[in-house]
Length: 249
Image (cartoon, rainbow, N blue to C red; front, side, top):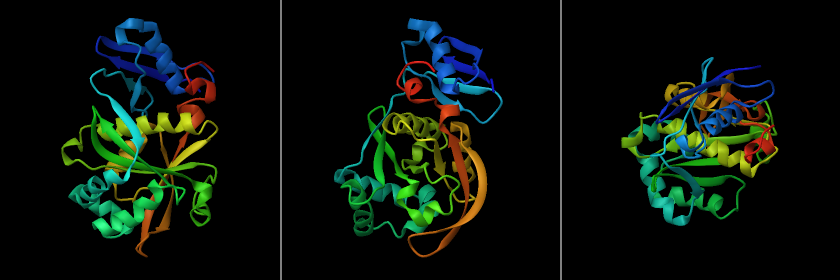
């Protein structure tokens, strides 16, 4: 179905409509291409895909990159996990002592577990992390989810001064673009935040996730959280493999 598309740029707003079978991101890139040098050839990033108008933005002053997490990042992970705005929603992963964080994340960093760890950098500064995993690699969890072929994702912005400034949406979008370029055939992304975590649910909606079923998810500490399954339709939002790499569908 066609959708109205807007791309905000330093020079103004570009407006158009996605073509039949064209992803929203592809339509935004097509609009940006019509502006040429005026937007510096930068890719549009989603800022709010939750409404009838799919809104993107090109901000040349905001550079968000994703890099693999290393053991040297673990002190930052400890600090982020102990931050007040994070601690409530990650309590199920256990107390974030240096020893516990090292035991949990080092296995993922080294590839001993299938979950992959990434650090977000904003203009060169590490601000948080995202972890992703093939749902099928966790069979018990896959039974709770709508699509076992999906790519699962969890994330946090750890630096308190960056919370509430729209950075979560931009960072999660940067991860989504990175993920589809790594996993060319993935049909969907899946996230399951706590049902009380409205800020996270709002970020997911802005990136294109749609809320689905509620379910009870066992946590690492033995507790159970009631979560909301949220799914992003990759072909609809980001496009097919050719579309993602810079061509058109």
